[in-house]
Image (tube, rainbow, N blue to C red; front, side, top):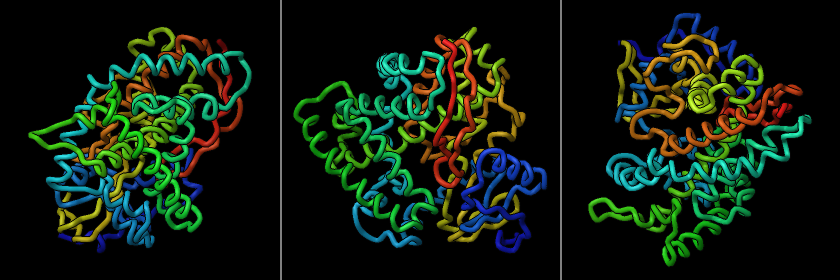
Length: 404
């Protein structure tokens, strides 16, 4: 079987800061149209095919290359390095299975249901500021405060801490972005933000040990599996994982969903007519069509053979959820269309499937249903400002206007 390094593959620069919006869509369409299931990128090989991508995500012969990134960008010490080593996405084998068995019940679909009422409370509190029909930035007024206030309530933290939680999430999330890691100033800020988070969460955990409440941290403190419990170090890093994976990501996915619906007024009208049924479907369609995690990396720890190609030990692949999610569905956005039941790759697959996926789906569905019941029309009031697809594919600004 040929080695992946021996193949003549099309190339794409995933570190290009201009790779966003229609340029990103066009680049992916061009790669898919070329007929190859692989493409060459600066740090590895891009996997465009869904079935192959899921194989890479599920195989025990590959791991998330977070510690390789730390090595490549000389993150050898400090709070960020401590966090990377203890991040659940960089832990494998029996240790990972133990941590997941303890954290999964706290974020199961049933457990997440209890958080829906205060999601609606937060949305109701934010609504008056944007309901007057004037132009406003959806990111600043709704998409940014909503998930950070939600995660504060989920953690049992004071809601006044929501802005700090958002700031920490935004910065610590950049550990997965090679562009950010390569910038000394951004790297120094990441180190400082991790230290700030640890200093904040440790007293909160201590208080919850003394006085448990109906929140995520208390649930994790009480979690037990065959006599095993979480240590303080494990607990504070799991809380950090939930924060990093549950604020900036949800903010970005909600902004993309509103952008897509604002461009399609007939679909907004359909959502308004039946928000109970279509809001969850609209959330799923946004997750499928414009995943804010368009690329998920894996590092081979032993040779892997897929589709007649050998990937040697040390190979890095980037599984492209953007193309994978289109393998069995048309390349268009439609919240009314029936979709295939095979799971999209936006949240990954296998043992590292996103631990906060249920919470994210609930937040997206609640926000879309809430807004659909109150805004007769939604329209873009300016050009969206998009981030690049390196790291989290976010939205910096989304000027819109609601007709209440």
